[in-house]
Amino acid sequence: MAKKWFELAHETSGYIYPTSIYCLGAQHACHKLGIDDGTLACWYANRELSYVVIAGGFSRPGKIILDRLQNKPGFLDRIIEVNTKGIPAMLKAARRLSGKKLASLSDRELYGRWEDWLRKFVSLMTWSVMGTILEWEEPLLTNALEKVLVDKLGRHSTKLGEYFQTLTTARKRTIVNKEETDLLRLRQKQLAHKLTDQDINHHVKKYSWIAYGYDGPGWTQADIKSRLNQLPKPPSRIDKLLRRKQEDAIELPHSQRQIEKELGLTEAEKRLFHVGRVIGYWKFERKFRNQQAHEMMENFIREMARRNHLSISQAKMITVEEIENALLQHAADPQILNQRLRESLVVFTGLKCQVLSGTKTRRLIGEIQKSLAIDPRTKELKGGSAYPGFAKGIVKCIDTPDQMKKMRPGDILVSASTTPHILPAMKRAAAIITDSGGMTCHAAIVAREIKTPTVVGAKGVTKLLKDGDLVEVDANKGIVKVLKKAKSK
Image (cartoon, rainbow, N blue to C red; front, side):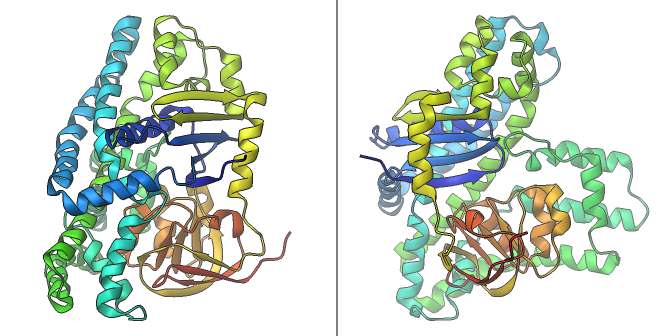
């Protein structure tokens, strides 16, 4: 009997390395919870990637995580502790796989450094990814938080979206917020004719990895100059933006306490919103610090490719289990890797991993495609409300920086999942819709900072909507309505 698959996330670019190690981390988290029979897969086709799971596979561990977060205070403390200590340890191990001196290492030394990094990465992810699993298949935490507000305000209250956004916004500054503040300060220097190349180089060195994603590239000097030139010209506007950021940070805790008092939240309800803020912050922080590690480790991939006479793309189709042989035996097979580049599946059942490519994938991929298909006549999609508001406009599908030129103010941005590379387009959008994500994803957190109506996790939206479609976005309720389809060219 054919299984029903569920798409957890979709990326427009992805190789087996490093994406499959995130699946490994998720499976270790499930193992920690006592669940070893879930099946999770990474499906690669034409450079695109889908994370898919047999339906229900992450609902079960997600419910266990939610229960422990609500009833065992030490569980959240453990997640915080592992992130606080594990991220620096993982980055320290990544630095040992960076630089140009890797070629001087023996095969055994290079593999030892890789093994050390992988051990620290899995140790971190086993706990850190709990926050992702919590919302991956079902928005379990979001639903619990929304229920609290609905019980207090009523389902049709106009305050639902506003209060949800305020109560779930992390009090700690995100790395993206810090970078944007520093960019505004660079703009101040630029407008005062005091900006130097050294200033820009320092900014790139400090923050380039924010835009790296899985495969890069990170921000360059040209990217920073372009972003600076898109900022307002009057110095008074820049001063105002910086003041607003400072004021928002000061006002947020006060606003949250005011809402808690107005609604008469119980201590348990206050704690649940605290959980949402903490989980959201650490998920965001860990995601970008992982990207920092991937950027550091670019030379490791180049060195593995060199020792096996492979291209970079081929080297990135080597699985975690095969890296030992690739480094110690130089045994990577380019024909198999080329086959995987065309289409492949990495399937995890518990902690066991299987790689399928060529004819072996046909039945399973057919099963997945059937599960993920969406009726083109669909008129309405439902997702989660990341920032409240209402908008109507023309769809522009944007996943990469080169697509941003088609974006006009007032358009509706549709993306598989947003990245810092497309932030300028996000700022021009009347509303944002994503295929993937929950209340703690990049789009949701950025939406709260730029105050743009946003619906996340509207499954199938990138398959259903195309450039030119007219849609209506009710981000208060997480509803996207298709008003008119663009004519096919």
